[in-house]
Structures are given as C-alpha cells and as structure tokens.
Image (cartoon, rainbow, N blue to C red; front, side):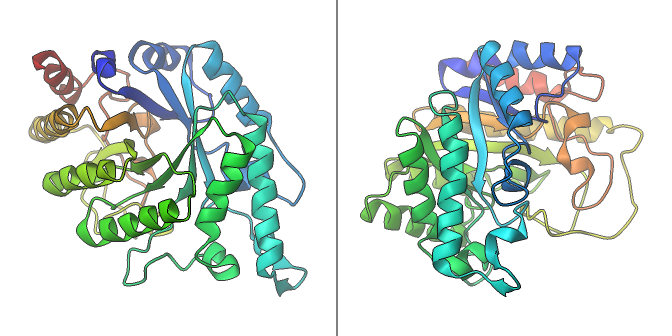
Length: 337
C-alpha cells in the first residue's frame, strides 16, 4: 500500500495496539499511520469524572511512535461511547456552564497529554444530523447548544496549537448532509475557529458506492481550504437494510451468507469497486491528505458485529492475513499512475 505514499498517507485503525506478531508485520509493511479504534474515546479515557485511565492510550501512542507511525487521535467529542456523568448534576440534568467546563477539562487533559506526539485529532465526531435537523440531537447539543463544536475545537487548539484538528462524519458525501457539513465548516471559519480538515468516513456498501457524490464532496471540502481525509474506509459485502454508520442502529436477524467465505463473483465486485475508489482518490491526490482503513483485515472489522453479528469480508486482507483480489486491484491502480 505504500505505493500511494507519494500522494497521500495510508493508515489503519487498530484495536488499542493489541496485535499479534503477524498483524504487526502486516501493519508496518503497508501502513504509515494509525488511529486507535476505542482507547481514546471519552468512555475509555474518563469513565468517571476526574478518573482518567490513560494506560491503554499511553501504550498505543508509545508503541506507534517507536515504530515510526503517525498517530491520529480518535475521538474527543462524540455522543456515542460517552459516559452520562458529563451531562448530569446530581439527579438533575447539568447546565450549560458545567457541561462546557467538563468538556474543556476532558479535552485539555487528553490533547495536552499527547501534545507534540499525536499529529491530528478527530475533534468532533458525527454531529451533523441524518434527518431534517441541522445537527444531531445529542446531549452535547442539548446541554451546551450549537456552539459546543466550536468550543471543542478551541479547547483542542489551546491544548496543542501544533495539532491538526478535523471534523469527522459518515454520509457527508451525500448532498443533504454535505451541505450541512459545509454550513458547519463555514460557520467555524467565520468565527475564527481553527479547523484544518474534514474526514469522510467511507463506510460504504458493495454495489452502492456513490462515486460521483464522493468526488463532489472531496472537491467541495477542499475548496473551503481544508485537508480531506478518507478516515474509516471499508466496503460492507453483506446485505443490510441500514446505510450510514450509526453505531446505535441495530438490525435483527441471524443470516450469515458468507460464513464459509466470499464467493469468487463477490470477490471480483469488491476488487473492482475498491479499484474505482482508489482511482478516484489518486485523481484528487492534490486534495486528499490521508486514506485510513477501519480495520487491518477481515477478522478485525467492526462489520462482523454491526448492525448485527455476521461474517464480513470488507477489507483488503482476509482472516488469514492473505491479500485478496481487492488488494491486488488497488495496487494495480497505484502502479498505473
């Protein structure tokens, strides 16, 4: 994968550094950046007010830097995997000032601890609404107001002025959500809030990848003066009802059509669609700063558990760490350019 490094960084999300020797070898051979899947999320870092559990995040950052990997921190503010204590004052809902103070303290502690070592942060994750509303009706919005996003970016910048700060979300390539995200970006810029990039998550579905809208989004976000990242790339090969990547949305059912492997015809479609994506990324290599896969291989993908338990095959390497036809198709794109 490092053939693409001449144009943009290639990264992978990994589970808090807990990889076996073969997985570590695969990671170091093909990737130059890492994102922690869970150990920096609010529920892991500060499960109770004032009780910080930095151990796994410390180990993650120390190991990654020792291997020469760049670290992207994920994520400071998100309505999922966030403890309820942030939003409570005893038995009552906490007021704006208290929640804002807690948010600032959390960001100051986390970003400040890794200042100069974590290159970039997904400051706010998935704040734009999937529905008719502008912003998702989260406890952050309800307790602080729309400016919670600006306040989070300002707090992160104060804690580490050298860090790059990103807004990260799924589905923002689609027209309606893209326009809301552009509204958010422009509002932050108008206020003088430091924002350096936007992450298009890239949780796409086989045969339903919106290539034209992805291209439009890349161009539009870059035109705002921002770096563009594809931050959580995978292609779900198992049919499901839900699009997007709302981790709170679940589906019932026990169907597991590819429990014994992916048929050759589906492998080929996956390869063709990954290649088309990477051809698009290379076309816009002047706009894209990083492409990060959400997982290292099929066995490490969150799509084995969401929106229900099933055997998925969304990555470039299989469960035995062997390259799939999709890997060879992607590399072929890099060799052609």
